[in-house]
Image (cartoon, rainbow, N blue to C red):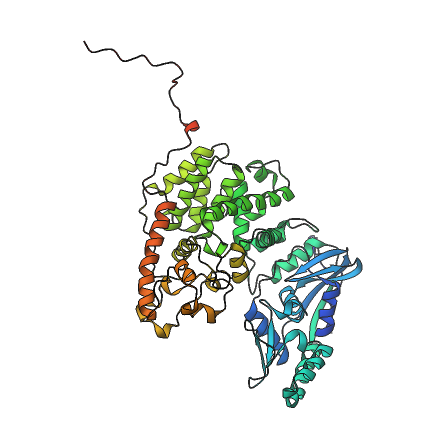
Length: 557
């Protein structure tokens, strides 16, 4: 008799099928606030932005389905939870619901309806009473609530009643407003509940559910593979530290991951899954460090790199010419945290030369990171710097032109650094702007656009000046109506921004363009060390021994 093939499932499976139920949105948001709904430590960070939030709330108001949630029910410790901008001190619970699928939606709901963070920032939405039909949209900067209702107010009945009493002009719309509040609070969100103690199984479910839609980035995959519950430092916390402690903007998670990997080995694009295997650890430049020490040391190397870039003339992350340069420099400062003054000067020259040349001559960004990072070797500080310099030594330097400016191009970032070096003054205080001013104005934007508004509207300029840097002013935090009235600036302020005599806007921009081009050329000539010797520190040179006194010259008979 033939033996029957085994039919039992040998892989782990759920002992019971997930149970299904629905939650009113108000109850669901309250559960997140009190910590009974949490995010597993292997989940990716918040990826949604303002348009996603607007679409989500609009779907709820119009009764559209928003998809079901998947919860993992299990005991939970007391812990501090950070969801978007909201921090929650959650108590220990015997049955908490961890979100396996639906994190983006729940975190967005929490932030949009938060009474503090829902009033400003990326998730500040309003219910516009002047639109027909009434609709939800993003809050405009410095917008009052005379004609709009902030979403945290619309979602909270007591606050909505106070708002209605303070805005009697909209008494005839109270029925529509109340209906919107009711739809938001009572909207039923379907959810499945899974009970299992097998965390690896939940990771597998999570991985499968994220193979559709927005796929996991490498940084999110790395976090899911190696995150540890209650771990102090993670890629996300490094990102937050850079933003809050160093005031240098928000570095994207992918760049931080590359810095993490490049620090431990030159190939920042290697297989993530093998990073902490014994074989990979043995080949690391830091084979004896723990996983937690690796995260902490990554922040240290990034901090040293950022301080170097600030002193070199790059005041903010969005002013960085190329992100791969940050990755390469973070490897250098990881291996050589206190380089010699001479090597620091040579490294500055290399950065600005590479910033002007770009990655094209090394075959693109990926190749640039691999090749340049491989030039940096432990125990070879002087030689590493010389190899970096050699990589750009025979490449022509073509300085960017002020008449062709874009905030999303490397050339634009280089030009803004040159403009920043002029120490432009604030019309309000007549003092130079600071890096903190840039950080506050740019926030988490990926380009420096918010900090460099146009001085004259396009309609006042000929087409050939529409993309000129000469029509931009570095004025973080200054209202647009002030920026666009240079005739009201103090003459000292105008001069700091390289504006000459007042007159026709076109003539002012043309004249300023010539001054800016000279400032850019002078800035880069200095920073790239044109015409200067690039030899290494003297103590690295193999000089002859001149300890003995030389013989005096013989007389000519």
